[in-house]
Length: 435
Image (cartoon, rainbow, N blue to C red; front, side, top):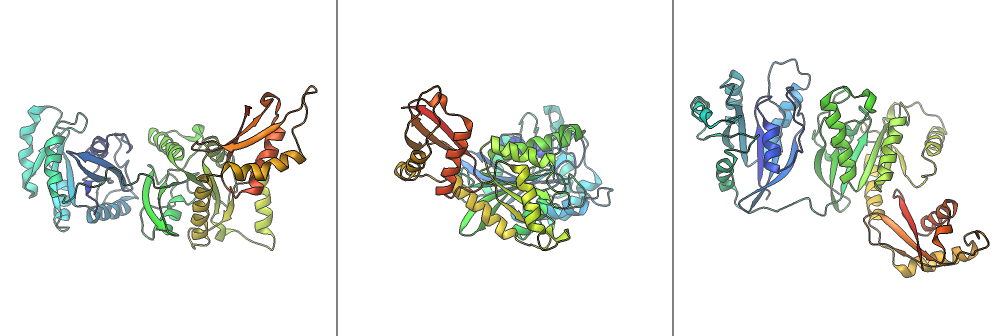
């Protein structure tokens, strides 16, 4: 049973700062603007040998102008239900507010262990202000400074007394990561929510609803993996807000950390330059890639629509013909499970270890039929090939004159590798070494 701590409270009291302090890294976006955090955000922490998960949540408000208000409240409720201990964060510098009182009444209905965290107590002289927060009706109030970590030790000493087990250091270790990336409003969060069967991420018609990268555990097809919903990625010239800048950087970091990138494209708009930029970035980082043409239910179709559009996309992707393309609808669930099944297949290809004997049996005859062209009267002889023990699929060809092998022959060898071994969706690196 996982140990889970939820961080809740009204907007702008420092919940994400406390979250980052507890997990030991800047995982959540922080800004002075109210309402930066929207979805539930998970991280892992440890205190005195006890491991636990931490959930960051959006600011709880009622009767505001925020169009995300109701969705954020739903996310907060889910986080509270999931948790063993709730950290109710208030702002000691602002004092007790009516919204704090209303939220305290709401928390009591959940019948969870609650600790009031009087945040922003950066100066010890502020500690005597905590008295008014006892009127909220909870037994313990801890003055802390999330910025400096002052007071967090006393808080965590109390929190871990409620955990029956020591927990797992990193419950995500060794689990494949699949990141869902794309332009704003391509349907990434809808796709993830449909797969999970719950409203894990907030979905609206407003582009940029998702601001942070959100991880979710998912089990399907006999495998367990982590689905990462990311913020929409736009060109730098289109990004004018600091929050969106950090959202895009988080999305790119998720791409760099993942095993397989699902690139979600709005089929009604087609593959645009920014979609191609995301695909190129995935290729540069040697990630497995699956392209999903979402909102396929909105497209007018004739007999050859799918074939013609796929041909057009493949022309844009050239020479990367190994990338699978699926036509899906997150709204109607059309082919979405086929899509995730394909992503798992691509992960399997990325993890492939091909025996040296199998490589040589398959490729040396091909090389014999079509050897590298002679350069300056010198004949190039490839002796054998082996897969290198790297995180990406890399094959080393040992030969007498590696410096004379040109790119067209490199592409020939890649095509022959793909012809003999199922490596769909995975970039291949080929290096030549002197024998």
